Image (tube, rainbow, N blue to C red; front, side):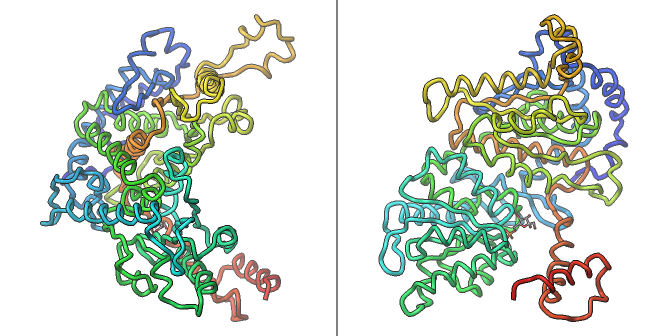
Length: 546
Ligand code: F6P
């Protein structure tokens, strides 16, 4: 396996890109359009129902060619093949990275470490389908013989964000006879508010945790179990089997928790948490939208995987998204990307991308443990478009920080009501225009604006903006979009020479929290803690409710 592990700044092509960052990167997007009006067409690419327009980015074809050259030098193609073939590219955990296998069609084959991984994937999918149909069609009954009315997914991180995002995104396709809820935070308020809404005797709880040891999920699952047993006649423990199913890689922990392993849906250690929404972690999604729509979602993922595997770098959507994102981050020094969906169904898409990209590429050392020597992972955040316009867009347009933007829009509304969609799309296009082109002082004066307001009304523009358009947010399109962002993340990780598939940065906080917990409720000496933490513990001891 040849995956580069030295800093990208040591690449032969880096110097050329640094020069281009001055000549092209410091140009105004307005001037790039004057020099090449055809860029509105030539910098647009599409695949599998997703069109991506890079014309409002501070790039030219020369920059794109040079970035593709860098990708070749960093051996992106062999790294990609290593991932798809199941080599252990997650070197710090010695694991394959095979979320792409989750969407391989039935009947295909992929031998990893001597075993064909595809048949077990489809066995689990088929078991999920049986459960999903039973719940949707009223055959799965609760302990007292009542039909299931509510599904509660209990998980956190990738075991929550994918299911929530997909549920919101595909709500139009979901069963309206069932209500879906998501509990993630260890703050008891989260589970309490959901338990206040549901009747445990008509609820199916899905405990979703890859490791089945995550404290937040285990505490929430235990509280939900107690709430069930509190209403079950005679607190009969056998009720748990009718109301709890598990999604995990650890059968022993599932069983220790008291969930029947027959009600467990497995997946594999080669599926990273943030890459798991199409593993059995997608069980709540499948119950919501039904098996046929879920298969469409998988097809969308697979179609984009195939595009990523086969399209030339210069027209490959995830490759271009990844390279241009890297150009903005490392060469133009733009620290953040706002994800601005102009589609209410993509409400949670920014939060989903936050974990996917920031947990993957928020790294400071290369695969060989050297300093990365450049800026890496961008900060992702965002809100649905028009809501954001009345909130933080002021800073996007006139603040001192440059924020790159991904604007997502759809051609057709799934809820066509009057002129709503036309107005929504006009807003998306207007914002993309202002972000890229701005408004000069001369244009403002020409509109007879009083001189003392001219500077206040100037809009600098030149905010690099990618416009991503699709027909509608269908299951297929959602799969295609998510797969594009997954591979964008991979591309950047390979070019930067980092491991996008571990997350050591989250471990220390977990460890310290476990150490602190007992000290909050006793009066043991705090000498082992730093002074700031000790003072906070003293405050909490004095004020906590007993
Ligand atoms: O702490 C981070 C993390 O490991 C994420 O990567 C993961 O998605 C989340 O915790 C939840 O993990 P699990 O599914 O094992 O409960």
